[in-house]
Image 1 (cartoon, rainbow, N blue to C red):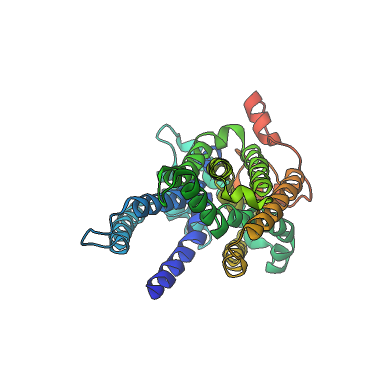
Image 2: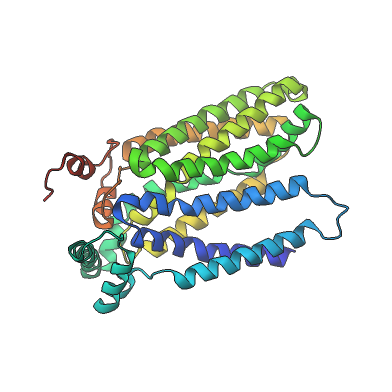
Length: 368
């Protein structure tokens, strides 16, 4: 079982970095947020399926739930491999290898059905400019200019680790049991489904409202709800009350909804923030640090009312402070090309909620 978990974790690590980079490169500029958000939506759906199955599993059945997990995993893997076989490679991948013919063919396959040859040429030229800019700069230059985006995305992405953690899982189980009187009941299922629904809402509106607005809305609500749970856990007597535990359960479910809004915004930012050649290394490093935070919480957290209070108070404050920092530093990159978004990320501060490029295009004015 342990070996299987390790191998599965390694596989998810391989997929995460490639998925974020590839989606950012192949998605159209006006729908990049939607397609990049599929990363967190897929994770949310997988966890929801697992929680629903575990919550409703009958131990008397001749097959164990872990075996069914494996069967479902194999089925999803087969579907994923089939999708990958039919997917189109990024034109940037071929442009970096000076294969313009294959890059042009891939670019045409990625275009909308209503696209004209001039649209295809324009998109291909933009990708050529992106590759040319990345190749002609030195690695040292890319590493330096990526420092500011790295700090921004390290703070932003590592907050994802606090959106789904062992204390949150133990809280929903304990509060649901105290409130409903059974270990597994409908609040646990709703808790996980709401996370997935939050990511779906982000997918639908991210490229219309802007990813920064959604991220800030999700963060401020997450901070408020977590501080609310800290307030309840500050009094030990509340942990023995079905009423207050019911409130904690409701707060936990609402928290997952807004967490879904926030986490779905991070893959798009990750795919846009860094220069082309150093992007895989920075993205991988941030994903590793995110998982390291999960490990630290699991190893250090002690299950007691006082620990829950300290955890929720500390994390709530971290979320609130991080929201204020990201409010000032995160750019709005909706409808920008990868090259434009990368330059925007290099600014130390950016308080706008809509990109100037998007405003100009919406007004129908030419952009130089």
